[in-house]
Image (cartoon, rainbow, N blue to C red; front, side):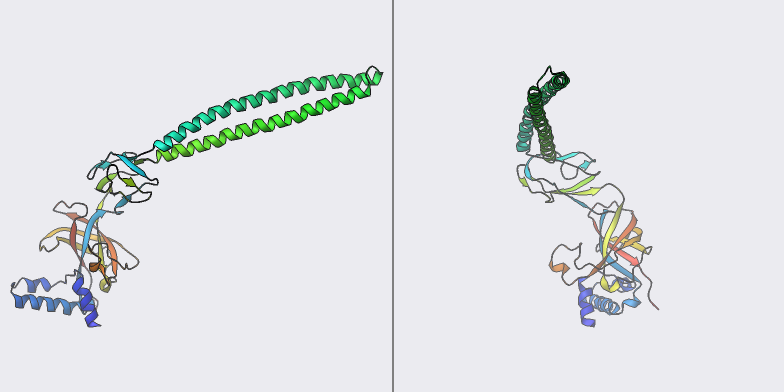
Length: 327
């Protein structure tokens, strides 16, 4: 068990309070060996540790945001570059939207044609309504005359049949006019979809922030939902770090933190833990290669800090967290 702990701690950047005193006594090989032995011995008993150190990165409190598009296409213009500040709604990329624009134009012409057809169909409806009114007046007169013998019943029946034919024609004309109006709405829906697709080819910022990386290249193809840039949203910067699982339960929100450059001895800032992940992560977010992250489980944390030196986004630092040793 001790061998497994020593291997895990050999890969994790952990600084134990009191070890630095031994390191200050000299830099020869023997003293370095003693320092390493003392460090490993201390790690074998984590309950005796009063400080724990881990690597952290400077990032926005909510983390970095990967930018992507919900449409595919060839990049025809790049409006923002790495290092540029953007506001919500600012255009970042333009994709080729020629097909969508042509489709929209065709659909607009179809709407005009269908509107003319719908107008003609409504005119037929109006004509049949006028004919029906006229035929019903004529039939009403004939039905009164047949009572006096001035009109034959056969004539009345023929006029009723003519009225019924007009009624059927009117219903057919109404159905056709209704279908024409429905077709206009269908084409308008298609036009809206085409315009949305065309609008999706204009990629804009969804929030204020700073573009910290840009992978898009002019003339290259952009796939839908594939990240092309990374945005650091405006707001408070904090330290995002990870604690080895051996010390995961020793860290608590509110504990004091000292900040140093990696490998440095001088404290450049102070802070406190403001967030702890409720779960362990299997893979580190802070290691540059896959090999470095093997056999790791860590607990993510965030530190609110103030620094004497200006720290840039993605700047790596070492956080020393003041934990309480167990009795």
